Length: 472
Image (cartoon, rainbow, N blue to C red; front, side, top):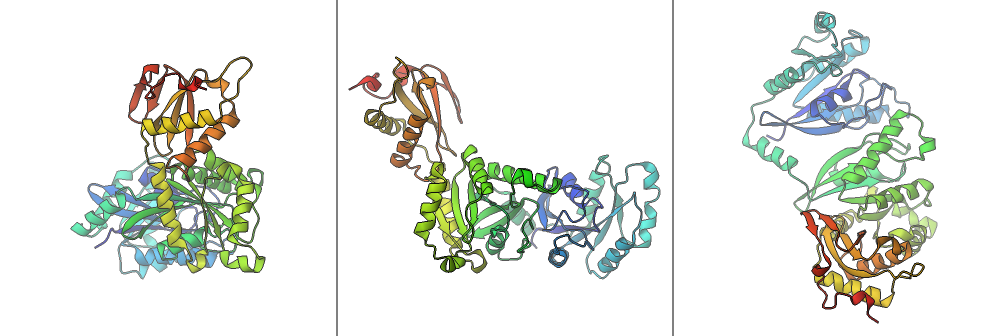
């Protein structure tokens, strides 16, 4: 037996996404009073009383989607119900039984699997006294809850565990495997309709995300676990980003925040572009955000099957991106067609390669040999009558590689020389395709590393000549 799936269903706006967030203790699903916010299946692995189960949020049954995606949403809901071990049928205590609740109940009544009726929004004892009327639409086990008042969470979880099949060794093994840290977390980012969800589905080998030509189909950031060559990965699908001034509502605003959070969580960011579209202001903003977080990045040009019609080559696209994003000259490129699964495995292998680069650590002696050669080849320019002096450097952290340069005064080193040094470090050290974080500190100050705080006095220099920065 694999890990059981507990699927949350119900009509729109009964609090399904709030319930998922409440039970998981995390902000996973977007919560908004607008019907139809949740479209894709959103899942979270729960670990309660030594039991594992996957909690799955779904779209509202019966919703008429504003973007004509009702059939796609319905297909996602049905897939979740088919895979469910237990179904949580969520209703609203404040509104009482509604006609659409009856429609949902009729659908669930045909299932040959347990259904738990969850009467949500029971914020007062008076409402609790009225929950029995929901038995008229479905006579099954019932628990009443209030997410906003934090009422009966433990009772709901206990009831869920009691309704699940008895655990076996397979559940524990699979659950532990899902909890275990994956090989990589990949954030899939880009503007709307560049093929991110199609790519996710190709990785998962299933219709995990709704795929549509309508921009903005994905609204949540969704973690999708997949395996390749026996290794586990997590792909974080993010909402397509628009200009901030173009955000239409709170749903898109919170989707943007989730996209930014996904970049911070990721080991590698896949920056998606479409082969049939030029770089936009949104793309430039996203690349800026990736640089701000010092994340390894791959430029992924998707829909490469369309390039023949546009008379574009990989060389011309590479030159175009290098010219457009001069600050990310280190970032590699990949050209894929997600709908045909073309070059996808090569892309994941490339992501593994640059993630390994970001985790490397170089010796202090090797680092200082490179720094010394860089300084002697191009000395930092004088500021007024003061000469910038470099004493030595040390790597204090990885992911990103973080280097502290000990000098006489940090403010004497202009940005252009710092960019020069970073370029040399990327070329001469094993960090050719990842960003390097550089700090300048006065000699004798303390440096915080991932191992703790270390004192770097001038006598710590590993070079024979302590004043090598002043040599002719």
